[in-house]
Length: 157
Image 1 (cartoon, one colour):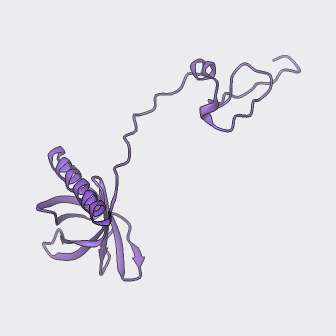
Image 2 (tube, helix red, strand yellow; image 1 turned 90 degrees about the vertical axis):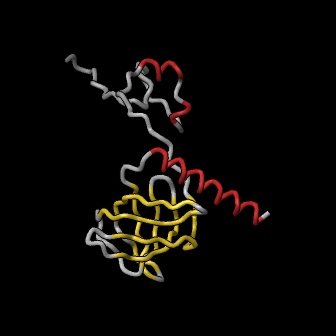
Image 3 (spheres, one colour; image 1 turned 180 degrees about the horizontal axis):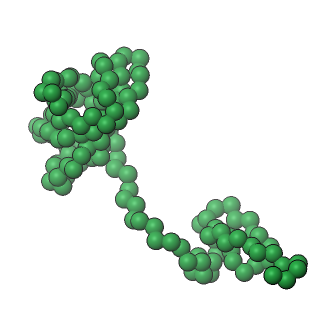
């Protein structure tokens, strides 16, 4: 390596081939030629996050534990990927249970995995995520959530 030359590391967000380092406040201001010149690694396609509906305890739930005991709760938030439930006592993290609730005239009965609980002023807020929900059930749940939002908008206006 000759004296006086330095090895410059490769950074994807910097424009290659210039002597000075340009200041670009955001990545959207990167010149088009730089984005074409720098090879980018394969990025997996990111699906948009599903919308969430705040139910604030208006929907009652029944949680069926693996030992067939049942625990009652209230849905605080719900989306097509999971939600947040209000419980008197928290359940173990990573516990797989059956969750049953009514939304409108539809009954949803699916396997969920409980996530780490958080203490709330009245009981516990326990997040959960749906496990292997069939596409048909997901579509029904999304339709019910959209109609729930529409009803709430109609009642406020």
